[in-house]
Amino acid sequence: MSAPWNFARFLPLAERLLSRGRLPALLFAVARKGPRLGQLREDVRLLQALCLAWWRGEYRAISSKALITIVAGLLYFVSPLDAIPDWLLGVGFLDDIAVLGWVLKTVSDELARFKAWRAAQAPERLRVVERLPDSPDALQLERGEP
Image (spheres, rainbow, N blue to C red):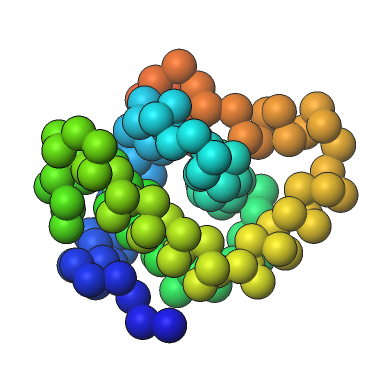
């Protein structure tokens, strides 16, 4: 299945975001927008948990292509100016939902491996690994980054 229209422009943005260490800022934007998702909320939380585990260095068993696809999907989700602008009430999230659904299907094997990894972890460890700190800066400080 081919990528959704307009998604490809988010791939280089995702690569740049990862290379510049800006993943925490994206994860906070996702958390702020997440409550509007309804049934997709748990899927987005799974993508967010994977990104947090990767960011903290706890889970690296993911291909760079899959990680970039996930980050690009999350960028698309938080972008107010995508194929259908989010400010168009009622339809503004339709493209976001379609792109997230496509991302979930595209990286489903990677997500299955991540779920298996999560199932093997102690709940206390997962609470630490997947905890979103109070601010993006706190997450960067936690990793010892400026």
